[in-house]
Image 1 (spheres, rainbow, N blue to C red):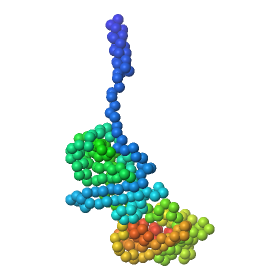
Image 2 (cartoon, helix red, strand yellow; image 1 turned 135 degrees about the vertical axis):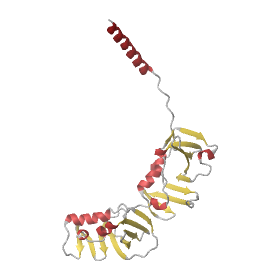
Image 3 (cartoon, one colour; image 1 turned 60 degrees about the vertical axis):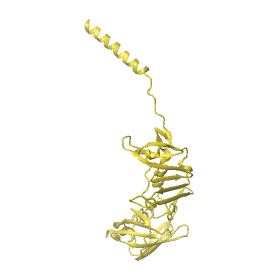
Image 4 (cartoon, one colour; image 1 turned 45 degrees about the vertical axis):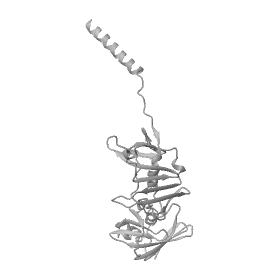
Length: 283
Protein backbone atom coordinates (compact mmCIF):
# COMPACT_ATOMS: atom_id res chain seq x y z
CA UNK A 1 0.00 0.00 0.00
CA UNK A 2 2.83 2.38 0.86
CA UNK A 3 4.44 1.69 -2.51
CA UNK A 4 1.27 2.70 -4.34
CA UNK A 5 1.05 5.84 -2.22
CA UNK A 6 4.59 6.83 -3.07
CA UNK A 7 3.91 6.30 -6.78
CA UNK A 8 0.77 8.44 -6.60
CA UNK A 9 2.62 11.26 -4.84
CA UNK A 10 5.45 11.05 -7.41
CA UNK A 11 2.93 11.21 -10.28
CA UNK A 12 1.35 14.32 -8.76
CA UNK A 13 4.76 15.97 -8.43
CA UNK A 14 5.66 15.17 -12.04
CA UNK A 15 2.30 16.49 -13.25
CA UNK A 16 2.70 19.70 -11.24
CA UNK A 17 6.24 20.22 -12.55
CA UNK A 18 5.08 19.70 -16.14
CA UNK A 19 2.26 22.19 -15.70
CA UNK A 20 4.65 24.76 -14.22
CA UNK A 21 7.04 24.38 -17.13
CA UNK A 22 4.22 24.59 -19.68
CA UNK A 23 2.57 27.68 -18.21
CA UNK A 24 5.79 29.43 -17.09
CA UNK A 25 5.97 32.93 -18.63
CA UNK A 26 8.61 33.22 -21.34
CA UNK A 27 11.72 35.11 -20.32
CA UNK A 28 11.81 38.57 -21.82
CA UNK A 29 14.00 38.80 -24.88
CA UNK A 30 16.59 41.53 -25.32
CA UNK A 31 15.91 43.71 -28.31
CA UNK A 32 18.54 43.72 -31.03
CA UNK A 33 19.49 46.81 -32.97
CA UNK A 34 20.82 46.93 -36.52
CA UNK A 35 23.66 49.35 -37.14
CA UNK A 36 22.12 50.41 -40.44
CA UNK A 37 19.22 49.85 -42.82
CA UNK A 38 21.64 49.99 -45.74
CA UNK A 39 21.94 46.77 -47.78
CA UNK A 40 25.29 45.46 -49.01
CA UNK A 41 24.08 45.30 -52.61
CA UNK A 42 23.29 49.03 -52.49
CA UNK A 43 26.78 50.09 -51.40
CA UNK A 44 28.82 51.56 -54.27
CA UNK A 45 31.58 53.36 -52.39
CA UNK A 46 33.71 52.49 -49.36
CA UNK A 47 36.14 54.82 -47.62
CA UNK A 48 38.42 53.62 -44.81
CA UNK A 49 40.25 56.26 -42.83
CA UNK A 50 42.87 55.57 -40.18
CA UNK A 51 44.27 58.26 -37.91
CA UNK A 52 48.01 58.42 -37.31
CA UNK A 53 49.27 56.17 -34.52
CA UNK A 54 52.67 55.35 -33.10
CA UNK A 55 52.78 52.13 -35.13
CA UNK A 56 51.42 53.48 -38.42
CA UNK A 57 50.83 56.75 -40.28
CA UNK A 58 47.42 58.12 -41.19
CA UNK A 59 45.89 56.57 -44.31
CA UNK A 60 42.84 56.73 -46.56
CA UNK A 61 41.63 53.87 -48.74
CA UNK A 62 38.76 54.24 -51.21
CA UNK A 63 36.96 51.48 -53.11
CA UNK A 64 34.29 51.95 -55.75
CA UNK A 65 31.97 49.46 -57.40
CA UNK A 66 31.24 49.48 -61.11
CA UNK A 67 29.15 46.77 -62.76
CA UNK A 68 29.30 44.60 -59.63
CA UNK A 69 33.12 44.70 -59.53
CA UNK A 70 35.07 46.46 -56.84
CA UNK A 71 38.20 48.49 -57.55
CA UNK A 72 40.63 50.39 -55.40
CA UNK A 73 40.76 54.02 -56.48
CA UNK A 74 42.85 55.47 -53.64
CA UNK A 75 45.76 55.49 -52.79
CA UNK A 76 46.26 53.68 -56.12
CA UNK A 77 44.14 51.92 -58.73
CA UNK A 78 43.77 48.13 -58.67
CA UNK A 79 41.23 45.35 -58.80
CA UNK A 80 39.91 44.60 -55.33
CA UNK A 81 39.85 41.23 -53.56
CA UNK A 82 36.12 40.39 -53.35
CA UNK A 83 36.22 38.40 -50.06
CA UNK A 84 37.97 41.30 -48.32
CA UNK A 85 35.27 43.71 -49.49
CA UNK A 86 32.58 41.29 -48.33
CA UNK A 87 34.12 41.28 -44.85
CA UNK A 88 33.85 45.06 -44.74
CA UNK A 89 30.23 45.00 -45.85
CA UNK A 90 29.43 42.36 -43.21
CA UNK A 91 29.18 45.24 -40.75
CA UNK A 92 25.73 45.90 -42.17
CA UNK A 93 24.55 42.51 -40.86
CA UNK A 94 25.79 43.10 -37.31
CA UNK A 95 23.18 43.20 -34.54
CA UNK A 96 23.70 44.96 -31.23
CA UNK A 97 21.87 44.01 -28.02
CA UNK A 98 22.87 47.34 -26.49
CA UNK A 99 22.48 50.85 -27.77
CA UNK A 100 23.65 53.92 -25.89
CA UNK A 101 23.37 57.65 -26.33
CA UNK A 102 26.32 59.21 -28.07
CA UNK A 103 27.58 60.88 -24.89
CA UNK A 104 30.86 60.55 -23.01
CA UNK A 105 32.42 59.05 -26.15
CA UNK A 106 35.83 58.72 -24.50
CA UNK A 107 34.31 55.98 -22.34
CA UNK A 108 33.77 53.91 -25.48
CA UNK A 109 37.06 54.79 -27.15
CA UNK A 110 35.14 56.89 -29.68
CA UNK A 111 36.23 60.41 -28.84
CA UNK A 112 38.98 60.09 -31.46
CA UNK A 113 38.29 56.75 -33.18
CA UNK A 114 41.31 55.10 -34.76
CA UNK A 115 39.32 53.80 -37.72
CA UNK A 116 36.30 55.19 -39.54
CA UNK A 117 34.49 53.38 -42.34
CA UNK A 118 32.08 55.18 -44.66
CA UNK A 119 29.68 53.08 -46.72
CA UNK A 120 28.14 55.45 -49.26
CA UNK A 121 27.16 58.36 -46.99
CA UNK A 122 26.87 56.39 -43.74
CA UNK A 123 29.80 56.51 -41.34
CA UNK A 124 30.80 53.87 -38.79
CA UNK A 125 33.49 54.70 -36.24
CA UNK A 126 35.18 51.77 -34.50
CA UNK A 127 35.91 52.22 -30.81
CA UNK A 128 37.25 50.21 -27.90
CA UNK A 129 36.66 46.54 -27.14
CA UNK A 130 34.97 45.67 -23.85
CA UNK A 131 37.12 42.84 -22.50
CA UNK A 132 34.38 41.72 -20.08
CA UNK A 133 31.49 41.42 -22.53
CA UNK A 134 33.69 40.69 -25.58
CA UNK A 135 31.98 43.41 -27.58
CA UNK A 136 33.23 46.28 -29.70
CA UNK A 137 31.73 49.73 -29.57
CA UNK A 138 30.65 51.32 -32.85
CA UNK A 139 29.37 54.85 -33.37
CA UNK A 140 26.72 55.01 -36.09
CA UNK A 141 23.59 57.05 -36.82
CA UNK A 142 24.07 59.14 -33.68
CA UNK A 143 24.19 56.20 -31.26
CA UNK A 144 26.79 53.90 -29.77
CA UNK A 145 26.29 50.18 -30.42
CA UNK A 146 27.96 47.20 -28.78
CA UNK A 147 28.46 44.35 -31.24
CA UNK A 148 29.88 40.89 -30.45
CA UNK A 149 33.48 40.43 -31.53
CA UNK A 150 32.42 37.58 -33.81
CA UNK A 151 30.45 40.16 -35.81
CA UNK A 152 33.23 42.73 -35.78
CA UNK A 153 34.49 43.96 -39.13
CA UNK A 154 38.12 43.10 -39.76
CA UNK A 155 39.65 46.19 -41.30
CA UNK A 156 42.53 45.47 -43.72
CA UNK A 157 45.86 46.74 -42.42
CA UNK A 158 46.52 48.73 -45.60
CA UNK A 159 45.47 49.16 -49.23
CA UNK A 160 47.73 46.32 -50.32
CA UNK A 161 45.64 43.82 -48.39
CA UNK A 162 42.66 44.73 -50.58
CA UNK A 163 44.35 44.11 -53.94
CA UNK A 164 42.97 41.14 -55.86
CA UNK A 165 45.41 38.23 -55.96
CA UNK A 166 43.95 36.80 -59.18
CA UNK A 167 46.29 37.32 -62.12
CA UNK A 168 43.38 37.73 -64.53
CA UNK A 169 40.15 39.62 -64.02
CA UNK A 170 36.80 37.86 -64.51
CA UNK A 171 36.05 37.61 -68.22
CA UNK A 172 39.69 37.80 -69.32
CA UNK A 173 40.18 34.67 -71.43
CA UNK A 174 43.69 33.93 -72.78
CA UNK A 175 44.01 32.57 -76.32
CA UNK A 176 47.79 32.86 -76.75
CA UNK A 177 50.89 32.87 -74.53
CA UNK A 178 54.31 34.06 -75.70
CA UNK A 179 56.99 33.14 -73.16
CA UNK A 180 60.79 33.03 -73.32
CA UNK A 181 61.64 29.99 -75.44
CA UNK A 182 58.14 28.83 -76.41
CA UNK A 183 54.56 29.86 -77.12
CA UNK A 184 51.08 28.36 -76.89
CA UNK A 185 48.04 29.26 -78.98
CA UNK A 186 44.42 28.16 -79.08
CA UNK A 187 43.62 26.96 -82.59
CA UNK A 188 40.27 25.39 -83.46
CA UNK A 189 39.67 24.66 -79.80
CA UNK A 190 43.04 22.92 -79.28
CA UNK A 191 46.11 24.37 -77.57
CA UNK A 192 49.22 23.99 -79.72
CA UNK A 193 52.76 24.61 -78.47
CA UNK A 194 55.69 25.97 -80.47
CA UNK A 195 58.34 24.74 -81.06
CA UNK A 196 56.44 21.58 -81.77
CA UNK A 197 58.82 18.91 -80.47
CA UNK A 198 56.95 16.29 -78.51
CA UNK A 199 53.50 17.79 -78.15
CA UNK A 200 52.15 17.20 -74.62
CA UNK A 201 48.92 15.27 -74.19
CA UNK A 202 45.52 16.98 -73.86
CA UNK A 203 45.52 16.73 -70.07
CA UNK A 204 48.96 18.31 -69.80
CA UNK A 205 48.08 21.10 -72.24
CA UNK A 206 44.79 21.92 -70.56
CA UNK A 207 46.35 21.66 -67.11
CA UNK A 208 49.09 24.14 -68.05
CA UNK A 209 46.59 26.64 -69.47
CA UNK A 210 44.30 26.13 -66.48
CA UNK A 211 47.19 26.93 -64.12
CA UNK A 212 47.58 30.29 -65.85
CA UNK A 213 43.88 31.06 -65.96
CA UNK A 214 43.39 30.25 -62.28
CA UNK A 215 46.68 31.69 -61.04
CA UNK A 216 46.14 33.31 -57.65
CA UNK A 217 49.09 34.88 -55.88
CA UNK A 218 50.07 34.53 -52.25
CA UNK A 219 50.36 38.32 -52.24
CA UNK A 220 49.61 41.16 -54.64
CA UNK A 221 51.14 44.59 -54.20
CA UNK A 222 51.89 47.84 -55.96
CA UNK A 223 54.95 47.65 -58.24
CA UNK A 224 58.08 48.33 -56.24
CA UNK A 225 59.92 49.79 -59.23
CA UNK A 226 62.19 46.88 -60.12
CA UNK A 227 63.00 46.22 -63.78
CA UNK A 228 61.87 42.94 -65.30
CA UNK A 229 64.55 40.35 -66.04
CA UNK A 230 62.30 38.68 -68.66
CA UNK A 231 59.10 39.59 -70.45
CA UNK A 232 56.13 37.65 -71.73
CA UNK A 233 52.74 38.45 -73.22
CA UNK A 234 49.24 37.01 -73.14
CA UNK A 235 46.67 37.72 -75.83
CA UNK A 236 43.05 37.65 -74.76
CA UNK A 237 39.93 36.57 -76.61
CA UNK A 238 38.76 40.20 -76.80
CA UNK A 239 41.88 41.12 -78.79
CA UNK A 240 43.86 42.82 -76.01
CA UNK A 241 47.44 41.81 -75.27
CA UNK A 242 48.66 41.88 -71.68
CA UNK A 243 52.35 42.33 -70.92
CA UNK A 244 53.97 40.66 -67.93
CA UNK A 245 57.45 41.07 -66.53
CA UNK A 246 59.31 38.42 -64.54
CA UNK A 247 60.82 40.40 -61.67
CA UNK A 248 62.32 37.27 -60.09
CA UNK A 249 61.99 33.50 -60.14
CA UNK A 250 63.48 32.64 -56.73
CA UNK A 251 63.11 32.39 -53.79
CA UNK A 252 59.64 33.28 -55.02
CA UNK A 253 58.14 34.02 -58.42
CA UNK A 254 57.16 37.67 -58.85
CA UNK A 255 55.23 38.67 -61.97
CA UNK A 256 54.48 42.29 -62.85
CA UNK A 257 51.28 42.95 -64.77
CA UNK A 258 52.28 46.07 -66.65
CA UNK A 259 48.82 47.50 -67.44
CA UNK A 260 47.89 47.45 -63.74
CA UNK A 261 51.23 48.26 -62.16
CA UNK A 262 50.63 45.39 -59.74
CA UNK A 263 53.14 42.66 -58.92
CA UNK A 264 52.01 39.17 -57.97
CA UNK A 265 54.02 36.95 -55.62
CA UNK A 266 53.84 33.17 -56.01
CA UNK A 267 55.60 30.22 -54.40
CA UNK A 268 58.81 29.29 -56.23
CA UNK A 269 57.43 26.02 -57.61
CA UNK A 270 54.80 28.03 -59.48
CA UNK A 271 57.59 29.41 -61.66
CA UNK A 272 58.34 25.91 -62.89
CA UNK A 273 54.66 25.33 -63.63
CA UNK A 274 53.89 28.60 -65.43
CA UNK A 275 57.15 29.46 -67.17
CA UNK A 276 58.02 26.01 -68.52
CA UNK A 277 56.26 24.01 -71.26
CA UNK A 278 53.84 21.32 -70.01
CA UNK A 279 55.75 18.33 -68.67
CA UNK A 280 59.09 20.14 -68.54
CA UNK A 281 58.75 20.93 -64.83
CA UNK A 282 58.48 17.25 -63.94
CA UNK A 283 61.32 16.04 -66.10
